[in-house]
Image (tube, rainbow over all chains, first blue to last red):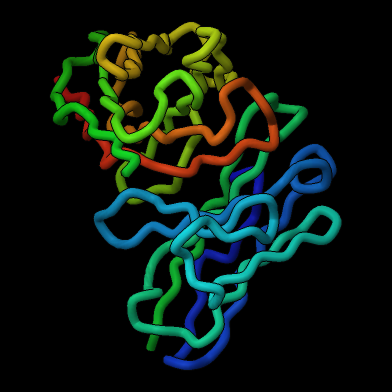
Length: 110
Length: 123
């Protein structure tokens, strides 16, 4: 059972927008920055959003992050087939004194 | 460019130890920390531990305290993760991931990842 709660799956069609939620508590999301990672099948995770809403170099602005209170979300606009992957949120948890990840959301592009 | 190249996968017996290496290049080694993240087969990501290469300070997830040792070698720009007392539950893919911060900081993120090292624990 993950400390951060994500829906196990999401889907959309090419060109659509899809949002993935990440729910936590005051000890984690509520007091710390959230990052999002994309893991393509058979590959290592890749950072796509950090400090709640910032993009690393090279990540398209089709990916956007938002945080409010104890929840965060990742929105992918203009969905493409290559966006089919598993997405993980992550943050620091002060109660656990460690980094925590969500359980991951597998995105299907239909 | 930043590169993190990990050692090949290993098969270990229960009760044994494994040491995984993460050789880095393309950035000033001591200016960034390193974390280790595990992924069990078909499962999600689990943070294990963090080392500040600059100071040698470490921080461990409670679950792994006492079983994980992190070290670094500045002469080869390599970070090592050793996990002891292996059980079948330790089977999985182990990733090293660069921390954007040199020292421990809860706001840091993991900005580059190694390719993963598969550790299989079987009798």
